[in-house]
Length: 156
Image (tube, rainbow, N blue to C red; front, side, top):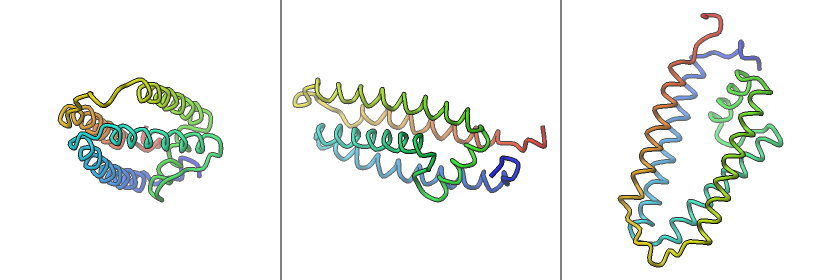
């Protein structure tokens, strides 16, 4: 579908719905990770987070190789819109950069997991929560800004 055929009000509503789904997922993830961190189970905490990073990396590679999207109907439609709006070439470049970043993150976590002794780490659930909450808030602010700056090309 061409960008000009998209109803921007519908896309904004889809993006709001996707943001709500993201926030519910992040809330669930926060509760689970906080539980593991609070009960001083760093292996489970780090392992669970590492598994999520691996799943994200696999999803990105699948998306990049096949061009098919993984997720809810809402997220698939939003991704289709973003692909149409950016164009095939820019979209592919962004996905390659995103995949490279996640790949580097995966390598970093792999080295971190196998080189760190978690038995005497003294993990504090409160200090682990601050970066998570900061990233969560930052993502929400960025999404609100992107939703509000979404305009019809005919208006420009």
